[in-house]
Length: 115
Image (cartoon, rainbow, N blue to C red; front, side, top):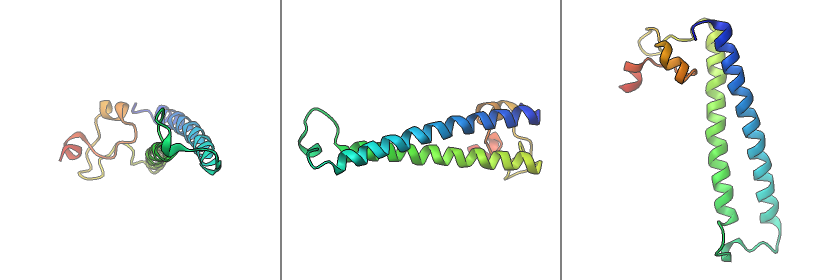
């Protein structure tokens, strides 16, 4: 994935996937908040399912994780534009292509990531 056009396309594709996931999570969050506002929703005494509070926490954790990955993708796109994509931020060596294929927003080579 050393060709810059392919890298940018892959990163933009992942960004679009993450944006779609964030939109779904926002919709889920809105639905849970609406359920929580419903005075007839008794989530604390429902033995059949998870509580609305638990569901909201799950959605929020997924949202934070997804937003963090989206920020990593944006940072990788900025590194492509700056000409520093694929260079380890710690030691300055090239990040192996296989690592970039598996994790296109990697900032460290295998050795530095393991340290």
